[in-house]
Image (cartoon, rainbow, N blue to C red; front, side, top):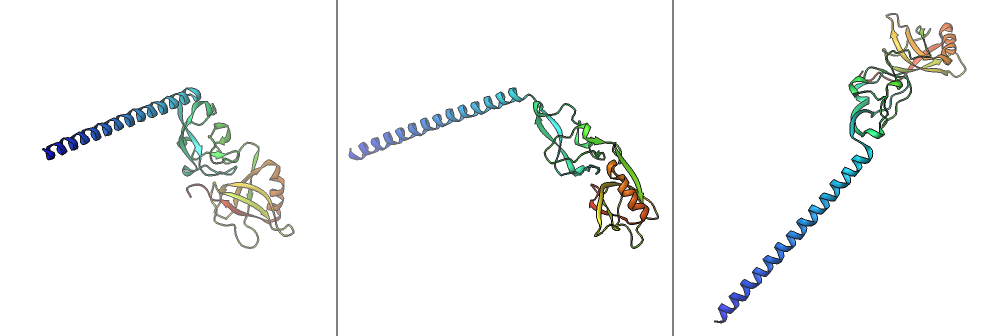
Length: 205
């Protein structure tokens, strides 16, 4: 009789425990559903506030003015439409190969007005610089960003920052520089004291 009574009590405890566990699970499930619904609602509110999301080309590696933009310099990223300039370039693939007219900094959305289709941006000048009297220019190629240095000045002086447009077989390098620096570069080039120093190789080189 006592054994039967103990068995009945044990079964009752098991049933109560199972009931409590099931109840707790139900509460957790309801709470989780509530949290999920809240998060979805907030996401929906955010989408309503900022507008639809669009894919835009974003700078991921700094590009100096005058340099050719490479495949690794930009990538497509999602952005709220309300935070995107209206004249952005459609895709990152349409940016590579173009020239940065101004410095491009990581995080910015690339707009067409900041890019050019030539290695000689508007307002710049291209000048030929023959190899200096002693030595040669470094191994440069079109698209490399360079400094033009006048080694004839006391201690040497950087007279312009530019981009290589072309390299001839005789070692002459044609460099595009801002218009305000063109006279200084021409003076050093005529004197045979102008040399170029690479500051940023062409992207993808």
